Image 1 (cartoon, rainbow, N blue to C red):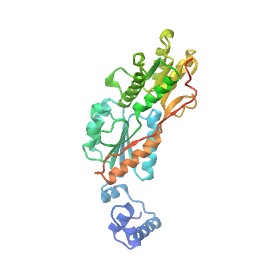
Image 2: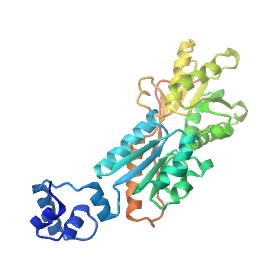
Image 3: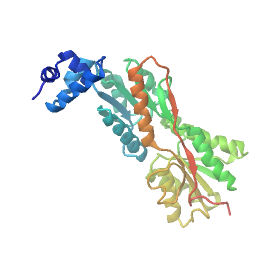
Image 4: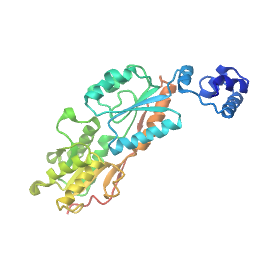
Length: 334
């Protein structure tokens, strides 16, 4: 197996110069860099990660902390992060742990502080647990994905605006009995992003003079929980809402399925709006607020590499694009 000394000898440079040329850490002329790279190709030389770490002070590894990736949004986001990291020859250490769990607390308290990463991407951070502040203590570059950033570089959609636009769409169609599916009345169990979406829903109702008609159905942001919550809302014929805003598309799809099983026609008897533009949103003709978690993953890696190159640079916030996509799950109130 070829060593860095073999590459240096063939290129006619010192081992230190060969290392700088191959790692990009430190100055070498373009002519020398090309010569060293050609020597490495001829010798089929591949830098050992441990040796590279010793030479550069970097691990070539990024830690990613997020909720479990069994939901579409997190799986898509992780795909975007992984694509960008692999393109940069970075490894990824994933910690997919439930919010407000003992495992997550142990991760923040004792596991992450001991790990060596060049940077961390944190998804779905909870301000009540001071998670960003705890991640910032070791002084590693940090980027968050989600509505809470606390001074770190971050990628996020405007969750308040997303739910407000979804609710206003239904109000414009003449609906006044609009329920929200996917929130919770337990503030201690409410995710920060979900809380902001409830705020957007309530703000739209308040502006339209409909604050007194607000209804929030407790449900996790999943298809099965959205189904169960919608069954509870729609089962009472006399107090049935004519429209639903869901915290995410998975909950919205659950509500559409519940309506169909109860014999309630969508959209002529019930309009439903989600948030995300899930891969199955088109299949269910779901009106939704579109966002691209995969692109957010790419943006997060770009922000992190910028922070790694210049840790003292000001925090940068990327407002991910979102827009209303009207399909067949909403209609004018009959």
